[in-house]
Length: 457
Image (spheres, rainbow, N blue to C red):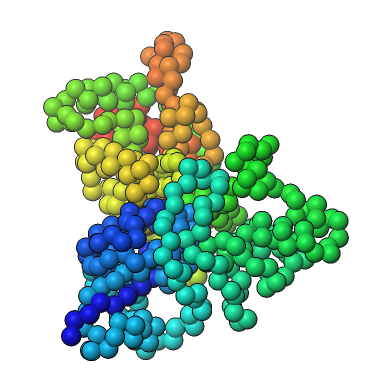
């Protein structure tokens, strides 16, 4: 007998062992009929925005989380009504909790459900039952929380109250036990307003009431207050943690070199007019990237990492070239895989695709990991030089400044030339001053005289 049954789709681990993701937007509504692998949502991890395909073909019966909600991996986010053979049992007898979960083969690369294969697994947290169907509401402002999609759930005694780190800190500062606070957010999430309201109704010291009043509420922000508080999450949270770790782990050294790049800029103009490069976007970054890749062949120590656990230096025989990209979501450093094997035209095409994908927020987690050395183009902001912080796990990062017309010594005379400053930061555990200096000098020599590529390559 063929009948319908309700199946829940739990948020999968989207790679790199991430424990949570934020629902950015839903591409479907309750009642929609979806096909297998149809995109149903966009979710943001700490590294990228990822499109989530449907693991089932059926009808959407419930959306358990609203956009803007941070969801833990393994928590149900959407329910489907699907056709299936229930063995003659009524649909209500279908129990998604009872049968062992099987990996869905259609979610290639996402790992919808992971089999434990007999290995010990972490005891799952108790989850609230899905709320009755509620239509998804759009909000015009990200500062005002939309109406919750699910009804507040009571917290069981052995379950940690659901809240965010800032809320837990506020409660700790106020001496409030979250077990006593009823959450009004999605799925019973305890918000800052919930803690403030609890304090306002209790017999706490005046100082606690003053502390609870700090920081605007969502309504105050919407009305235009003097301060705006934004949660630190996603890319910005990951970047902050990575930069702090890098700055206090790797001993940074930064060297600078100012170069007359007029010959390189003249070459760039000729290449743009060449038929072989027709349709490609050639920029100073294209030439700097190629020069750095050539220089790495002579200075391979800059293409390595420090393995603290094994007390080894790992030197790479390939180059995954990271390119720092400023995006609306924050700084990301996607990398071009095996860039050392690419021609100048290949690098140009890869850079264009990389930057467009990053700015659209579509960079995959795989493209944000595995980098071996990075370049950051601060010149696009009109900056001449800086002291870039190493991308964690890499030995060096090269910053290229703005190309400026400046009076410069040329053939024993003062002439107006195009000049650029290069800044190289490196991990002094891996790279000696001599090695870093030689690499930087090689990059500068290639930009000052591109014909040197014949001698250095």
